[in-house]
Image 1 (cartoon, rainbow, N blue to C red):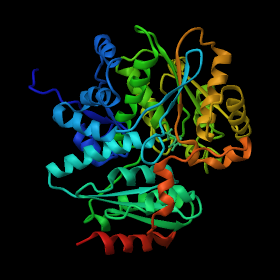
Image 2: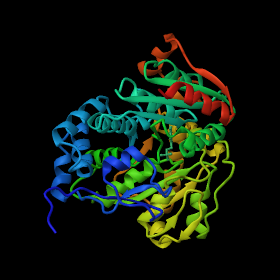
Image 3: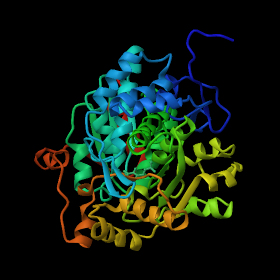
Image 4: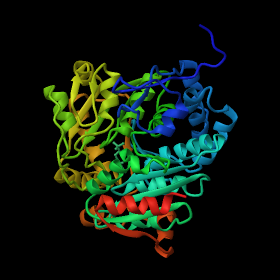
Length: 456
Ligand SMILES: *Cc1c(COP(=O)(O)O)cnc(C)c1O
């Protein structure tokens, strides 16, 4: 069969929904069978093309990598322009010792790695709905970082209104201000409840036929539009840290496993990877699964100081399992075991306690002058466990720091007696006015709020 343009097809991890193209996968978010979209094959980056990345800037690598997924749905020229706009900030690779680097994904407008995906996804979705003259209401629940990254990324995008629900007492002042000071097409509601309440309200709204008149869409980490851009920084790290076709050791502190899935995508596309280290906090369901072959989610999730990783049933486990031939659904039922032996070979999963996280903030600073916030400290500690078991030799390694230390200063101040420098993106928030609504954790109230504000 020959076609003029080879569009990539996206299928659901639940295996019971029709295949769609990237545009539909992005706009739908979740597949109709409640599974998650994955490309039915991974596009490849040849060794020659990989070599060219060494001389390219970040946004150029982004256009090259993402372009393999957007073929047939987006003009390469336009994609290049969107990448230039989205990635207008530095991506520091901090040398720690030997060939070990920490990649700081914290220079975007909300100072966490979520900016990388959210800024690209906002531009892609904004473009697709403008083409179709459609409008969307992006509804998202957040425990802090997702909501701010999504709100910032969609701020000012035509045709899109964003509504973020956050738990009143569970987000930091800075995280709240990142969402509540934007205005225009961004609206925020503080829910007097827990993050789980916010998420339940959002989930119910998506399945409530009384709200069919509102074009609701989700922008959380289940959207394939979040994962594809998250493979780009692994290619970038590889292009800067390796020689020839050397494999890279990658270490990504994880919660919902969206960030680490970016590394899996890069590897599936042909980037040489030695092993992917996935440290988690005390929510250890994935390391236990790989050790025992039995998956059992943790409910409710355990509250740790690396709070953006307090996930007891990672949504991207469905995707990871699918890549290894298995099928796991959203509630965490294993319908078909993935190839666990292959997963143990490819991944090193390890749980890090809060106590060890605090000790690591201290030791990384004292030993290497490496300043880490709790999520990055989980990563660094997990990396130490990995090299204890499988020494690096002279291979290069990259450990991901997912947020700016000034975003989570409390533990650093407690442990190190120093205050991290505050980047402008965060300090300017102090002077801005906040605007948000407040609501009890009551679905009927929320439904009336949606109908009042988003119909007609
Ligand atoms: C969201 C987040 C994580 C976890 O990323 P996943 O893709 O869910 O694994 C880690 N650190 C920070 C700072 C985050 O905001």
